[in-house]
Image 1 (cartoon, rainbow, N blue to C red):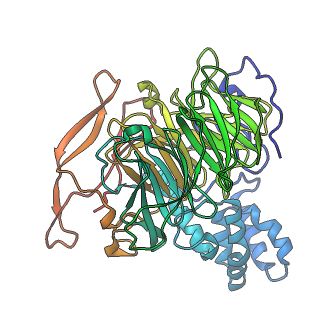
Image 2 (cartoon, rainbow, N blue to C red):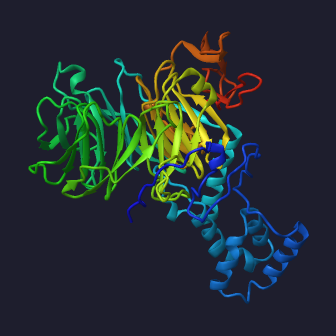
Image 3 (tube, one colour):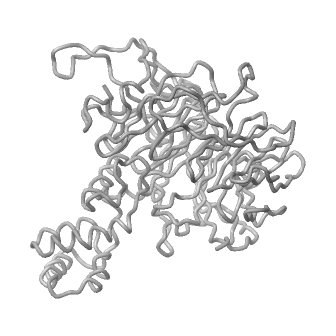
Length: 559
């Protein structure tokens, strides 16, 4: 169903006065006050019209009647209970335990989904109660600021603007003119990252003109790769574990000579490329001999970010997001509608566009975007207004004037934004936008976070010289299941540790930038007290509290 037609923006109301529309799949929701406390870590409990004693009586009566209530009736009652209440009823009797496990917990999971890519087993193969516990651990960790931070792979010699794609089988990075592919293998509850294989796609001595600017994983697992110099190819990745050769190029797509590709995105077998001169091209990856459908943007206009769905192409322009209708063979020359960025007279560009993942508590009509003016914005495509329904910002990043380069959904209600400086990742619960926090990604000093991919309890990202992962599911430590394998990142895929550790130590005297300390890496007692080992990997975070200065805290160190 296409988004509703746009109407003129309403004037005279601030963002706080406008409030917030329903961002989740269930009806309209009231605005969340800025001073609201942090949510219950188990989930967001419903507002009850009953006292606690009345609810206790209701639980007892419900347990007594479990044997007589048919499943269809019980299925209408159980969604009224939060997780605490479900677990209390579960403990009343064997019958209630059986029916809660069989019906109540699956219904709860359906109402509180999380999107997973790198679980060892699909969520449907987990015991429902175990999956609830896993989700609860992730939510608790995000609210408690408890996480692991690890670099993935070695530090790259040359700075680049990397691309990032994540599948259940591999972490795929486009670094300069090379594809860097880390295999993922089962390890406990999640998959772990193995040592990468590198596949050059650019000719030797081509320099940065042949850098990879976009990668799309096609339905048949081939890779569509776009390079800055205008080359678009389709590659078959060898599946032999011991393969030492290169990639198989299975198709070249004719691109106008002299047109430098700025972005590429995809959806199924469709590819969308844009150039710095304003040319937008829609390709069919299965028919490389066919010329693409094109449109040309107005003079001096370029797309800074793109997103493609079966029905629409989203273009992040200088001051707006333009939505064009598409079909397999054409793209409309005029926008179907436009979404606004900052209020005038300010102007900003949208650097990253995201729709919620397939399994998400967010309504599929919510569009998340990262902007040059240091803000993340949420637009509701069901609303006729072009204005954002929610905005998010890190006050310290905003004070720096640092752009938001990338964004992602993760966990249940959380979103993330990748900043322009020091590898900063900002995290927000969409129900409590003023209670966010940020962390510095491993080794990211001075660099933007160019791309991110979020899932359940893991957030993957890239800066100019390295890839990293932030884990909120407890999977990063080597003491997790899989032990000697190194946890989330196998030892063979770990970066060489530097002799010194650089960490932010607060804002400088003028408050305009971060101060950094440089110290030799410490040596700790061994894990078993029988030797010495180097200080583990960790990162630094801070809350978005503007009063009282910056309070820093550390992540959990990874040996």
